[in-house]
Length: 356
Image 1 (cartoon, rainbow, N blue to C red):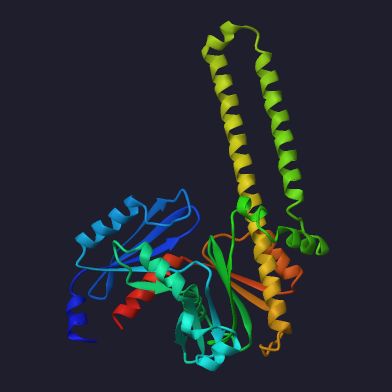
Image 2: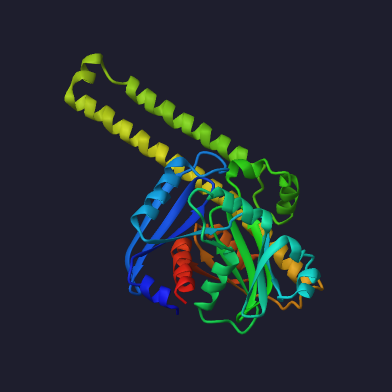
């Protein structure tokens, strides 16, 4: 540790982890001084459209933090396509996996495997933060590796997943050695049903007796019809009030207010059902990608595969119980889930890197 680092530790150092998803940008912040965390806070900024430039409010907030603290480190989680992880570290390993080393930035871990991302994606991230600056860019495979080694290492090949709102990554590790890695984008319910491969997905799911996206509009239609019947019933109950004078009385007004509250709660239930439906559609996509990845691992001679009977999920978003049952029943895998805070772990990794 250099003299500058020793002196720097005497000041407040702010570490900001930036995690983007489809609807919002989440900042996880930690203030460290003299080797101890003095303050932790989170700030969220809503996003209304695909992010091509930082929202002005978000940009101004980051600039204000840079004015407030002497040392500020902004790290960004790369969540776009054009990245991955492979076994091996040299040119021969990249060529073997058909990755052009001239077009990607790569880092090696434990002198055994590599995480990489295209220069195009890295340039996009830097341009996004051109006004405030970007100190660290993290591949999600780096985070997954950190989560893996923080657990008891498995001496047999084991499937690991890092689940985030807009994407998930899959890696097969044996202790610290990576055998297989893959990155997948997930989508909202609306965009998912409009994807180009939805027809292939429907055919594939039909073979497995899984609810396809074709049945989803029918489910929504039935829900809307049921909702209409409930609303009509409520209107009929209101029509049974004897006269307008009753509406002016305190008791009758309370009755109407109670009905309004009941109806409002009903709308909340419908909204929750819609969210559950969207999550289920997303998890169908996760299941599809997971199954195809395992088939690739088992059948591609590029990998020396062994049977995988355990999957460990580091969940930074949400996973439905239906998906867990599918993994256990249809893929015959033992499932272990750990809830994680991705932004919080990013801060910890950045702190360790800066003060190593």
